[in-house]
Amino acid sequence: MTSADLTSSSIPIRNVYYMLSYAFRALREQQYRKLGTESFDNIADLCAAILVQGMSTQIKRGLSREYIPHTDELDSPRGRIEITESARKVTMSRKKLVCTVDDFTVDSHANRIIKSTMLLLTHADVGPIRRAKLRRLLACLDNVGRVDLRRVDWRLRFDRNNQTYRMLIGICRLAVKGLLQSSRPGKTLLMDFLDDQQMHRIYEKFLFGYYSREWRGRIKTTHHRIPWMCPAGVELPVMQPDVVLDNGRDTLIIDAKYYTRTMQRNFDSYTMHSTNMYQMFTYVKNKTFQLSANGDAHIVSGMVLYARTDEERQPDGEFDMDGNRIIVRTLDLNQDFSGISSQLDDIVTRFLPES
Image 1 (cartoon, helix red, strand yellow):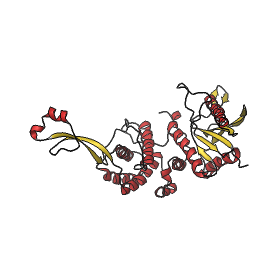
Image 2 (cartoon, one colour; image 1 turned 135 degrees about the horizontal axis):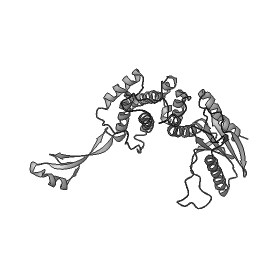
Image 3 (cartoon, helix red, strand yellow; image 1 turned 60 degrees about the horizontal axis):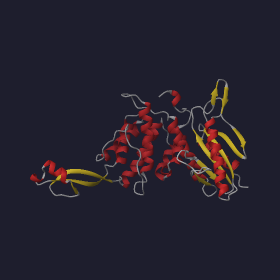
Image 4 (cartoon, helix red, strand yellow; image 1 turned 90 degrees about the vertical axis):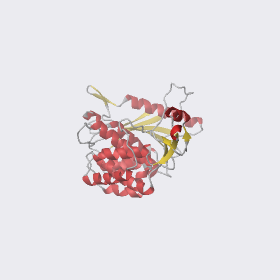
């Protein structure tokens, strides 16, 4: 991975933690709050701290279990009898039958992912105290197997019984992708930065989580799909905005963008990313049509909100496009989080005024 593929190191790790706390609701629970006052040497150290706290709590609550099929030769048949396999192995002459039994065990796919990630982090650039805590917790996972993290299936199903695992698996994925992609075999696993794809996903979830939490009861925050103005065929792409804010009178669609370069450059000329502008224009016009068809006379605007970089030129502007306002702004993540919060709040007060 080249340096061009990495995000700027100027984003404080503490801000990454705050962003994660909005992206994952579970991180706002009481047991995680003290992490907001701790210092972290790098992203791997942050992931280790979250997993240590999360798994300490989860082990006290009890590890999640799931039914895992297990086939074996049994003296006393139970479960599903495998007639064909029993006949093939001639087990009946030994007074045994091949049976498949569903064991209700902690050796679940989710627990295997977490254990394997914790083992990975013990070889990463993590502080000695957190590394020792990881190893103590791993001793509680003796009955859990391991998975190949390079080939793991991250598509897990979460329900009421394992909802606390959603955030833990999300942090595992963040750590695994960063450590395995940015390190060489045989070397200490380093993860000082997150690549653009990882940060873009966090940035999107952070914006939605922030407005959902901090402006609850004052504005409606959604990210529902926007239907096309024409009957949609299979050829038309899905329009899925990152954030839609609505105060009952005005609607603001926000699309989060996290790029290494926030402007297009052609020789000495800088322009805004054309695809982002086309995308937002399409969102706004189709949302306007949807609301009008439902009898709602909302004023619909759109904002492309870039994470600010250290480039000299930054995108900024407001444009009236066929009766709709398209805004382009940057959000500076390299500042105290109170400043980030102030910038996000200002977007609402300016573009969704109360009166």
